[in-house]
Image 1 (cartoon, each protein chain N blue to C red):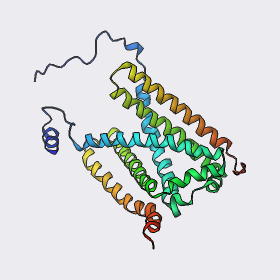
Image 2: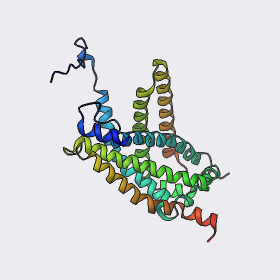
Image 3: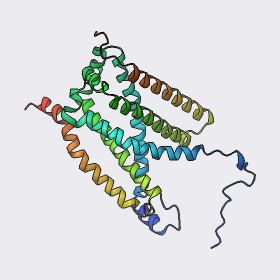
Image 4: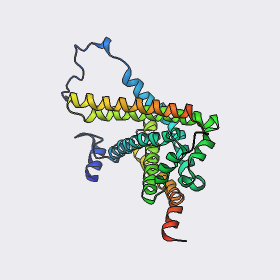
Length: 137
Length: 136
């Protein structure tokens, strides 16, 4: 896969410039994270709407958000949304910055670096309580 | 170099009937995207990471936040922008992958119905929230 990326990426005479390039995978990931977030939003508006039913109905459903498995899914959600946001900024730079297209690949490595730097402390703060409660402390 | 390329556009295409809808959609994704970076990342940071994260959220927490018009406007803007941004993204994906016209039509109908439902329900909840609703 990466072989094709290098040959097509550099020569460009045969095949496409884009197929197999990390840029293509960033586009695939953008779609997947976007769709996942959209489906979460659907569920999230429904669960929040329970504040119009009763405080206990809302509190009960919110308790499921605090269970270990769902807590882990929240880390996944934050990771997906953060990637989508950072890559969205990269897409806008490719579109509107005159040098954006030329730097699309280094910008991808940059946003992935920022993603890792944010997700490390983010995961810590999101999972801290769950991990402490599960394994004592 | 004499590479024969197919003419990308039919000479008989009725140019006058083309609309700028897809351009507007493309531009909307970028403008709403910038706003959503702030609105959604701020929301996720406050709700999931800041002091205790999700463990401190309950009815009283929501009531405290929605007592402030700032957060009402924040959440309302986030709801509308995220729903239309996400719905428009899904519309693009359905257009890309649905192979039969009928599949494409029904998937988009389901999408539009769910978008209207979520927008109306979410807006209704923000505008009619009652912190003193009977507790049971």
